[in-house]
Length: 317
Image (cartoon, rainbow, N blue to C red; front, side, top):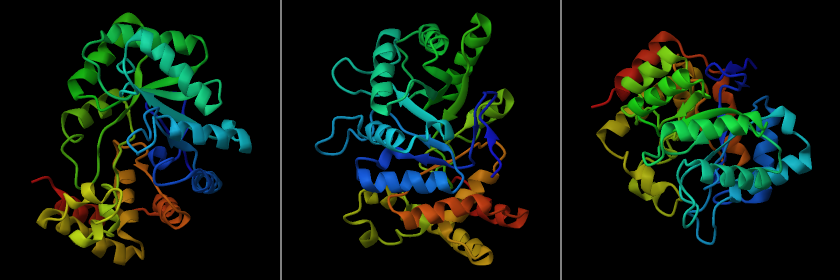
C-alpha cells in the first residue's frame, strides 16, 4: 500500500486513519485489540486518539482509549510499525485543559504513560485556545521535540485564520510548524473545511485528516429512518441528516456503489481519499465486519463521472 506524506513532515501514513475514539466506549478492550490487529495486518499504519477519549461515556474519566492502545502496544510489540497520533487540550478535569506550556508538559507525560511509549509521532492541539499565546504553545512543542517525546505536531478544530497565524509565527520565530489539521469533513459536512481552510492547507502543504468522515455512520446507509437511529450510540447525531439533502447524498452513493460493487460507506471514504487536499480521512469500526469494509475503501479508485455525481448531490445548500 502506498503511504502518503503528512504535510511536510517526516511521517508517511496509510490513506485511512483509524479513529480510536470508540475504544472504551462502543468497543471493549478485547474488541479494540482485534480491530487494531486487523487494521495493521491489512497494511495500514495510522491510528488517532486523544487523552479525552472516552470521557463522555458513563463511568469513564478520560484516557480509556490511550490506555487500551498502550496495552495493545505492549502485548504486540508493534510500536515501530504504527504512526501514533494523539491530542490534548479539551478538558480532562478541573484545571486540565487548554494549550498552555504548563498543562502541555503534564498532559504529554500522562499520555505517554497511558500509551506505554517514549514518544508520540503526531501530537495535536485538540482545540484552539485563544487564552494562550500561540508562541507559548509552539515553544513548548519545540521543547518536547528536542526531548524526543514528540516527532511532529498538528492542530484540530482550528479556523483558517488561527491556523494561518500559527504558521506565520512558526516561520517568523523558527518554531515547530503544524503539519496537519483535523477538521470535520464528510459528504454531508463540507462547509467547515472547504473554502478558506482547504485553500490554506493546499497552499501551505498541510496534511488533512478529517474526522466524522462517515457522518457518525449515516453515510454507510444504515440510518435511513428515525427508527434506525433509536438506541444507537451515534444515532442522535446521524438523525440530523435524515432530510431531503441527506437522502439525496445517499441516493448518489447507492448508485455509485452499485456500479463499483461496493457499499455506500466505502464510496464515501473513496471520495475523500480521492480529494487532492485530503491525506487520510479518519474512520472508526466497532467490529471486524465494519473494519473489513473500511479497509477495502482504500482500493476503490473513483472515476471522474462518479466523483462528479457525488459532488453534485452533496454540494452544500
